[in-house]
Image (cartoon, rainbow over all chains, first blue to last red; front, side, top):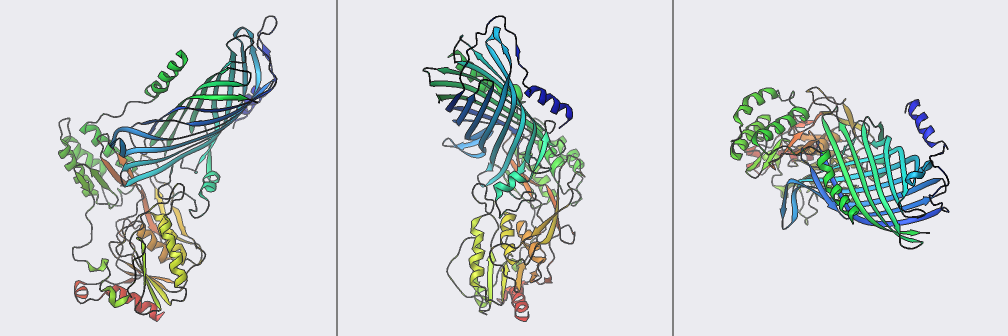
Length: 285
Length: 341
C-alpha cells in the first residue's frame, strides 16, 4: 500500500468533526445501542466467468442474514453474516420437470463483514451524520458448474478485503430513531485464493495444496494479496430501519456487491453481481 | 411500498446495466467462440504440430448464417478428430466426438486373460478397487478399474479409494503385490495419488506440468513439479509390479508415473496412452459442450508424455496367440519379477 493511501486512510479515521449546523442540533442523540437483526428476502446473483462459459448465469434465492450493530455516541460497529445457496441458469439450461439437468451452476455464497467507523461530519440541514472507517469483508462463492449430467467442474472465488467504509445516517423524522442508512465500501487490498491463480479450479488439483490435509485451512493460508488493480470490488448498502416500539423495529435493506477480475494476462475475465433485498426484525438490546 | 417497488426494479435491472448481452446463437458466433477458446487456452498445438490459424482459414469460410446444425457438427467433428487428443471431446445432441484411439482392434494386452489361472476367486468388492490373493498365496493381485470419483463438499478425493488401507492391512505379509491398471482410463488424479502414496517411502518428484496462462501460443506457466508423498498409516514397501497398456490413460498415467519413481516398483507391460492434459469443459450459445487440454505433462526425467505415453520398465505384450492359449503374458511376467525379488 502506498504512503499516500495510508495517509488518506489515517486522515479519514482521525477524529476531525465538522458541523454545518446553524443553531442548535435537531438530530436526536442516543445512548449507545446494541441492535440484532435477523433478515431474509431475495438474493439475486449474476455471473459471467469467461473461464467457464461465455454466457451469463442468473438466479435468485431466499437468503439468511444476521446483523449485529453497535451504535456508539461517536462510532458505529457492524457485524454481518449472510448465506444463500442459489442455482443459476443461462439461456442454454436444460430442464426436465422444472429441474435443471445440464448447463446450470450451484452457487454457495457466504459473506462475513465487520465494519468500524467514526463520526466525521454532521449535516444539520439534512439531518444526516457521516461516518468514515474501515470494513473487513470476507466473501466465498463456491460454484459447481454442471455442463452435462455427468460432467461438472468446481470453482471457488474467495477474497478477504480491507477497505474504506463510508456510512451516512439520515433521520427522516426529527428526533426519531428511524434511520435511512447508506453505506459504501471499496476494498483496497484483498487476500485471495492461490498465488498466480485467482480462480481456483478445484475439480482436479490445486497448486501447492496437500489434499489429504485440512483443505479449508490450506485454502485460507495459501493465497495472494491483490489491490484493486487486480480485483475491483464495491459494496453498497441502503437500508431503512423503522421502530414500532422502543426496542422492536423492522429493517428494510438493499445490498449490492460487485466484483471483477482478470485471469491469466487478461485471457479471461470474471464479473459477479449480487443484489439482496432483505427484510429483517431488529431487536434493540 | 414505493421504496420496496423501487428496490425490486433495481434488483432485476442492475445486471442489464453492467453486463453485455450473451453472444448470439449463430453458426458464425459458435464457430468463432470454439476456435478462439482453443486458440487462447489449448496447451498442445506445438506438441501435436497443429497450425491452428490454418484450421480457421480452412473451415471458417464454410460457416455462414444458413449453416445447419448438422453441417456445423461435421465441421467441429473434423476439427476434433484432427487434433486427436484424448482430452479434446465434443458433446452435442447430434452425437459425441472423441479422438481416434491408438489401441488396435485385437489388443489382448488391455485385459486380464484367464484370471482363474493366476488368482483365486472371491466375492465382489467395491466398484473401483478389486483384490484377490494369487494362486501363489504370497502374491496379491489388485485391479483398479478407474480413478473417477469426487468427494463431497471440500473433500476432493473419493473415499472409496481409501479401501487401499484395508487391502494393505490384509496383505502386510505378502511377498509382493501386482496392481493392474491396464484398462484404467483415468479420472481424478487426486484418487491416483491417494493410492500411489500408500507405496511411497519418502517424498519424490514424479512429474512436471505447466499450464496455459495467457492468450499467446507460448504463454505458459513455469514448469511445476508434482511429488508423491507417503500417505496413510501404513505404506507397503515390498516389491510391487504395475501392469500397463495403451489403454492406461489420463489420471491412470499420473498413477503410473508416481509409482515408477518408487524404488520398490516395476512397471510392466505396454507404453501407456499418452494423454493427461488437465482438461476443462466449455460450452457454446447453442448448448454444445466440449473439452480441451490446458496443460502439458512431463515425467520425472522431463520427457513430455502427451501423445507419447509412459514407457514401462519391462516392455511385455500379451499377443493374440497368447490370449487364445489362455496365457496372460504380462501378468506372468509380473509374477516372475516378484518371485525373483
